[in-house]
Picture 1 (cartoon, rainbow, N blue to C red):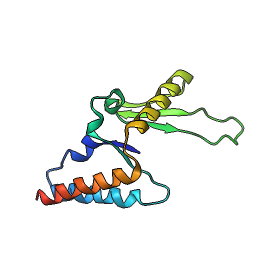
Picture 2 (spheres, rainbow, N blue to C red):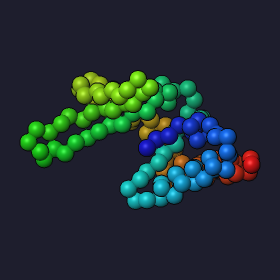
Picture 3 (spheres, one colour):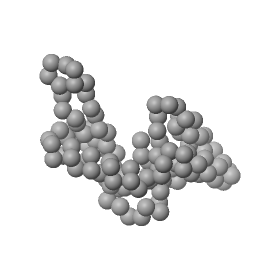
Picture 4 (cartoon, rainbow, N blue to C red):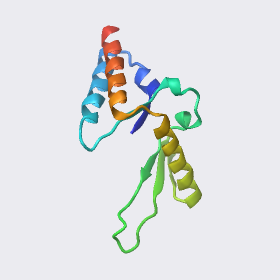
Length: 123
């Protein structure tokens, strides 16, 4: 997962609850199969930083009729599924670009801990 730093800094009314939620992300990020990276505000204005959430779905290839990679997006009016080659390529390029700008997992964890501490200190 790549999270925009702005999402982590947008507080709930209960700052201590927000701090606990970020702490839970830090704990989850220490699992061997979970990697959370943060796109820092210092990356500046960037097209993919404001593109919204999307999930790239890959399906098993060892079935009779394999399904193509699909991009899933959920919005206020429902879900969208994209599976055309040019759509997949656009999102793969976007994901790669986000990854180039995001902090690595350790730096992201440190930033999340700092933000959680700021939320806790603010109460």
